[in-house]
Image 1 (cartoon, helix red, strand yellow):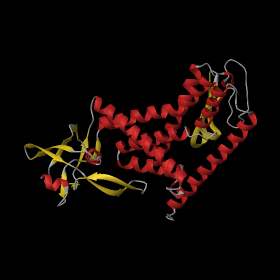
Image 2 (cartoon, rainbow, N blue to C red):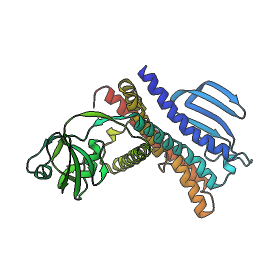
Image 3 (tube, rainbow, N blue to C red):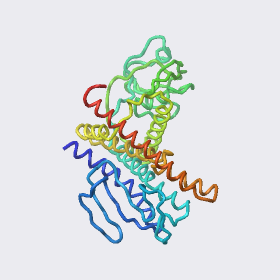
Image 4 (tube, rainbow, N blue to C red):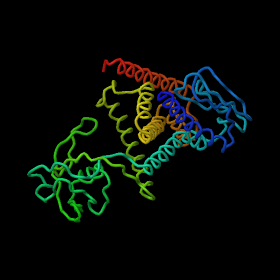
Amino acid sequence: MSFLIAFLALSFLVFFHELGHFIAARIFGVRVEVFSIGFGVKIFSKKIGETQYALSMIPLGGYVKLKGQNDLDVLEQNCQNDSYSNKSPFVKIIILFAGPFFNFILAFFLFFMVGNMGVSTYLPIVGEVKKNMPAFEAGILENDEILSINAKQIKTWMDLQEAVAKDTMLNLVVLRKDKILDFTIRPEIIKAKNIFGEEIQKGVIGIAPSGKIGIVKYTGFESFEYASKKLYESSKIILLSVQKLISGIIPLKEVSGPVMIVDKLAQASKSDFVLLLLWVGLISVNLGILNLLPIPALDGGQILFNFYEILTRKPIYEKAKYYLTLFGWIILLSLMLLGLRNDILRLLGVW
């Protein structure tokens, strides 16, 4: 059952991405010939109006086939009014960008829902206070609850860590039993490792969490802030991961494919619905950003071609477009095969 939920979630993400392309195309009068969830042989199809809606055999993607656009033949042209190839580069960019944009909208909505439903997280309650560190010297005690730092409300231990990591003077408002106390603390700067294993400097005050977990809810404008922050942080991590992968800091064996994505979604569906929503939101952001990468086989590469036409006032040479797109497909298929290989090796316990 969990794997069925995972496949449905992944299919929904693809559907929403393609829905963005579909709606933008229809707004600008482009005929949509096929709207398919999945690739390969069509299991089910029904034509409504001018569009054939299909469910295809391989459920790891999807596509919309626009009149005058063919991913397998990038040189296909059609000069009729309802053709994609007859539209201006600016309109093409909007249609291409609409898919990833819908992924960002979906992710924001899911994060917004999570904020309202409540997130299970470590509470900002102090456990161990390390001797001879700033918090100890200021008088912070075990079981103190941090209410705010520099007038900003602290709801989670992560909020506390983010505030302390900055090299600034901190004004802490603390709840100790039934008393509200104020403390002024200067963080100590130490060397640490970030999520990519790189050495960084960050501020610490010498406290550890008590381990108490609670459900933190966000209401009203807080939900909007939470969703915006999650969308920004997710996008930033994914972009940095791509950069670190290209530069070689992240090894190729860390690249994941569709098998691992489905596995993660299945695990999340077993444990907690909120966790499942968070994972779907994160994958939606991932799908949006990866589709905007400047690889000719993806939306981002096609957007670059159209920007080139806007700047030079002439389309890219047909042969150049053909070979660049072919090269893009080679890169894309290589990454997919690499991800699939890594997934299989992980499942077999090799890594």
